[in-house]
Length: 572
Image (cartoon, rainbow, N blue to C red; front, side, top):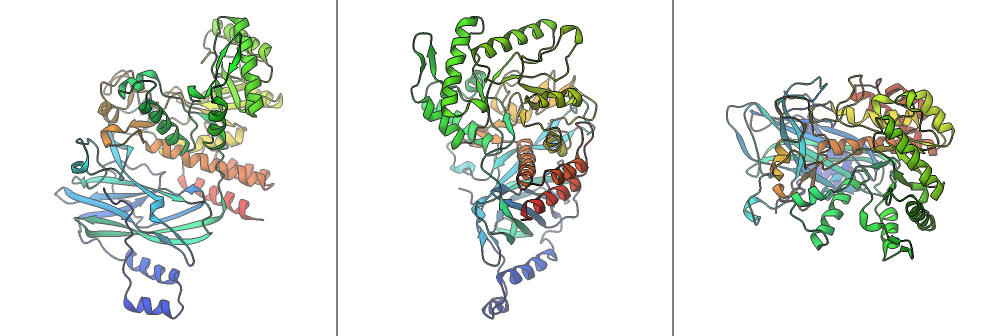
């Protein structure tokens, strides 16, 4: 097995150890060591190792930037990711490279390197940019291959994608995504350590890593409600898994786990919903226990009730009435909802939504009804959906502030969603070749608009354009053709199949990690508001993002605002 998090601190001179014995703190010695590292050149002059934030746009051919150290901030129970970019400026391929992280040490505490998960980024050849993309064609990083898998010779089968050891072609980059998790209960303070790049176990370069830990902790409970889709039958078939088997249950568990760890809530699993019939009502075969575990232990915060028997109104109402009683008894009715007709774009769709809404209300008026529609009617001649919808989920390019405020005042809820590249109006677009801040700004705009939920239609839409699992890695596009027509690179592919990389389950994308970071930003806003600082929070957010079309494209603006939010939380 590759030892990805091996402890490898730079050995200090003897007088350094003597200084410790005279009472100088570990922090002072580490600071001196880090200064030495900053001025230590690579043994190989053709290698440039630099540090990028998650919010920089770094392609495989992007020239090196100037950052040579990782300087991070985070609370406990939060991630502080950074990227180490290895650039080869020589005329020969660099081979047998590896990266290791040390423990991070403060004066009186440490964060084990076991909390730093390493991934090598796999580059996708964006042959023709996504619709409305301002960026060029090229090789973009996206899938994140974990280091913690068997080496090819140790695996039972040859792996297509291996994290390490890795190579870098001439005039190209290799990217290592370092996912640093700050454990619960970590003492506030400054922690320091080292990232070491090796070639054949010989040190090529050492990068200082400094982390400032704030004096607060992010909650396990996820504040931004969401639905990132589920596992379709087509995906299960592509994975060659048979329903009802142990492997089938395991793959669902791994799917949910990967999303939840990134603060993205999947669609509610089918096996937590009880059987029902007209004679006996709810038949609970352990679903109450599974649902409780899902919410309390796995942090699901939005439960989409299956909309059964729609064509049998009386049966449907009886079913929903019983389901509402069951959920209410568990205490989860308020976080549940029924998903109405998706994207009602025609007059007959509006008629159907009103019919569905009335049927659900007749079953139990407390069941929330969600519709993927903006708060202003699509066409005034069709009438409106007021009274039929409780949760409005609008596309970012169709947000109407005036009517959204009116619906909020009536006690209704606001969610938002994105799909494809439908608007060239400055709205964030979620494709691989879009600037990373497209994945951060929506959570800031959500706070501004009192949006409390987010919908992404699928995380694993593999079925319509892939012949094999490796095709998903190489051609994660939604569109007519990767070279011609309108393309949407990475659309609905936030997770890649793990099998080609020797992983049971799924491999995350950079875009999923970016969503997690934005969701953590949102937690800062919630925590500061709970401290009674809502006006200050609103003012800070307003400086960064005010509409889905007007938001900062400067990474430092978000970092500055985030630090201001942290200070509000800590100001007791």
